Amino acid sequence: MSDQEVGKGSPKSSSLSPYEEAMEALSSLITRRTRADASNVGDQFDLLFDYLKMLDLEEPIANMKVIHVAGTKGKGSTCTFTESILRNCGFRTGLFTSPHLIDIRERFRLDGKEICEEKFLAYFWWCYDRLKEKTDDNIPMPTYFRFLALLGFKIFAAEQVDVAILEVGLGGKYDATNVVQAPIVCGITSLGYDHMEILGNTLGEIAGEKAGIFKNGIPAFTVPQPEEAMHVLEEKASQLNVPLQVVTPLDAKLLNGSSLGLEGEHQYVNAALAIALCFTWLKRTGHVGDIYLEQTENLPEQFIKGLTSASLQGRAQIVPDQHLKGERSNRLVFFLDGAHSPESMQVCARWFSLAIKEYNPDQTLFHQQLDNSKFSHEVVKTHNGERVSQGKSTPILLFNCLTVRDPQLLLPHLMKTCADNGVYFKKALFVPSLSVFNKVGPQVFTLTDPKVDLSWQFNLQRVWENLMQSSKAGKNTDIVSEELKDDMETSASNCEHSAVFPSLPLAIKWLRDRVQQNQSLRLQVLVTGSLHLVGDVLNLVKK
Image 1 (tube, helix red, strand yellow):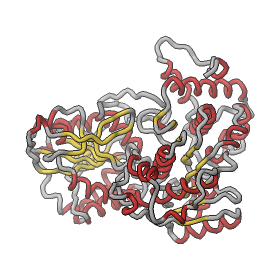
Image 2 (cartoon, rainbow, N blue to C red):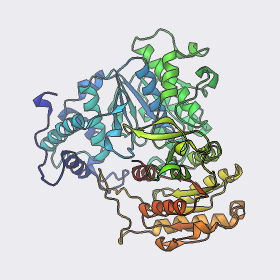
Image 3 (cartoon, rainbow, N blue to C red):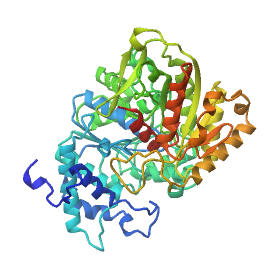
Image 4 (cartoon, rainbow, N blue to C red):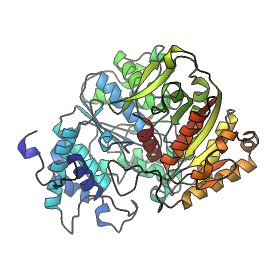
């Protein structure tokens, strides 16, 4: 990077590292104002084009070979599959996704790896300093997500990627990524109810917002949708002369005996959408002469490799607690999935129900360890090569969700689907988030915060206890084992089937204490409801 490319106006502080300084500056762009609040001048969509001029990004974006993906569920997975396929085809890839789980740099991937800290800081200050210099009261600094999208465009332009894969942050029509006027191809993943306070209360309204990424004459693909949503997508496509095609789930036989890199039956739909996007991108950029529909008999080897090697944190991910020594780590295992809509709760519950039956630490097992912020599969023998007493498996729920979500929709789907598959939680733990809304970067993890507001967690607990009392799930938990009744004085509220802990670290400590104090206890903990919670747990249980 040249001297001209490096920002010169970064703040100086002896107490902060250069990376922490950048996180402080980024945190200053976070507003508590809701994303739907039109009174915030900075939320006006057209301002984005002013920012592009300030950053000299208009021409680079016009020349960028973009794949643009919106949807309610599966956006991240589809983008991950797409990036992996095209990288395995030999192209230099840029991938922009959200949210991040542990480090902000996860949002910006070059050739499948998150951007290094040195490059991130250089591009960050180049953008931040220039915008600080040129914005004013009429054109204020961009808000947090808008700045990150602009930074992504700068990174991908400067790094001269062959393809930029952009995951929409929220909605589509007014999302910061939608400044792209001429993508190569667009994709819409499964639609459902989420962010209704912003996108609308019907599937039709939500579909209309997502279809906002359609551009005149640019091909688009989607997956099977509810009738109301599909009708709106087809209507919007017709208005813009967009050739819209619906893909069917990938036939597993096309993988030649291999499995998708991302777990879950629903991933075969996302994989099919990724294949369609990749074939169309290759065709429209002059890299292949065959259209997607002629490729149904077999997949190119690079596509198979891309699909089977794709990895994504926080989605159907299994992580033994790496802070427990020896065989104990196999007795506290976290099953993490960032599901946060009613439909994804059902998918998550089906995955968990199957995964805990297949996951058997009494045998050689798949142990997922953190490697360059990605979890890779590594076969690990049980402790000292000896067989470990399996003990009785005990399913535990560790849950939190944003206050804009409706637990009366989420928790029943989760409980019923698990119960239908013979899985009954012995205890549900509800915790507040560690990540705070107004700060990015490393969080200080304390066991408890005396000022924490637990009213939302008490509400979640009431919903759960009522469900347990009225459902067969409550009748099938048997008597809660004595081990799960111990040391409950650290909880803020302990009921028969659930507990509220004043912090996540306290809940994790309680779980660790249980398995350390009882050799026969094996806890399988489903962590779900929020990607923020999943990221916080990963931060605490990884080494």
